[in-house]
Image: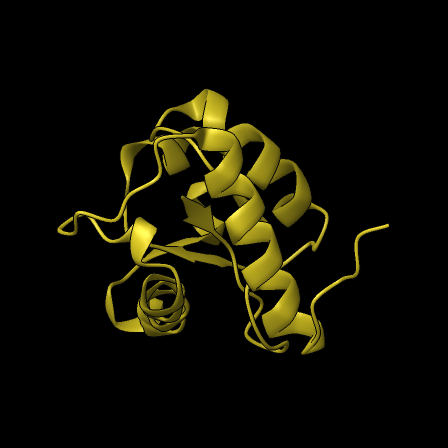
Length: 115
């Protein structure tokens, strides 16, 4: 799971689920790029270099604490995201729905009603 945060807004904003390829990162970048940020902070994964201009890219674990905190919160509430548990998702669809519900709850503090 790849997540993005805006340091001026609370919570996880866009996210994608998949491997660590450029193909998976592209939809996330399409959203983040629209923010027109002055710079982007990442952990230095090799895929970022093909999307982010060198002058706008800061590679720093120190400034990644916000993202890591959000990822920790996700793993806390959804044990299926933790790699070292027996509770894991066998279905990608169920994992997607679980993440959507949790991120929605974090953002709006309510669970959407299904009709």
